[in-house]
Amino acid sequence: DVVDAIGGGAAASFSLTQLGPRAAKGDLDPGFFVEHFVKDLGIALGEAERLGLQLRGMQVASELYAEMMKNGQGKRGTQALVQAVEALARKEGPSVVGFPPRS
Image (cartoon, rainbow, N blue to C red; front, side, top):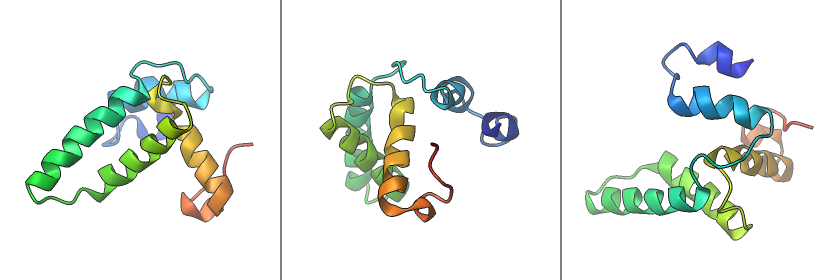
């Protein structure tokens, strides 16, 4: 699977090894709440702006997580982002994320 394929290289991280398999199985129980992550992203983006930095990847992540909050998913685990990306892929088409959504 994807976690095994990239988990031993430069992409290895706690999030990938611990939350990746959970997300793949549909386990979206929180280890860290989306609502807290949105708060932290806001702080980080505010500091980046203060320093004159543009962190587009972080901004996109913040927008996706904020959308999850709007949809009442603030108490889910951050790995629930996979569902937001899948919903975006269904809405916009698979080319948005480079692979087709899971069925």
